[in-house]
Image (tube, rainbow, N blue to C red):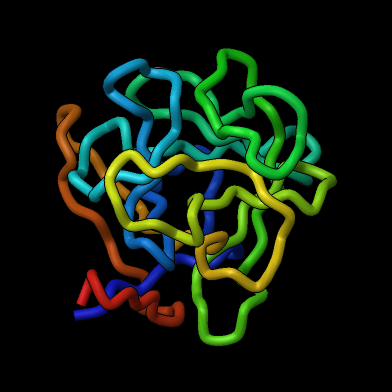
Length: 175
């Protein structure tokens, strides 16, 4: 069974989403070991895999906030290939665009105003604890993220919804 994903045009301000890497199938995860490192990890519906998208005032970028810690996706150091994505107190702005790779559906997340994409390292290694980093944008599915909206009741995950209006995001491990 495939899981459709939400396209960039359907992302809504202050809504919560799970991000799964198209290549590796792992979710963007705030490490429970240090509450700082951002890794790919098997999806488990935990709050550390839930991300709130907040549009900036000028509506030309997004801040991405952890549901579990209140910290934001940021970077460790300068904007370069291999720079780690980490959780930070002060938000940095991200650009969110629909996938530009034919047959690969989801979104590309870039540091605002740059060509550096959020990338699951080692070409989308599906192993738990794989580093999420920055890398120059290229036609690699490891830089595309399937996005699924999450809803909560009393602090618990109620359900994840599929967007029937979008194209299917299919990963062999999710079928």
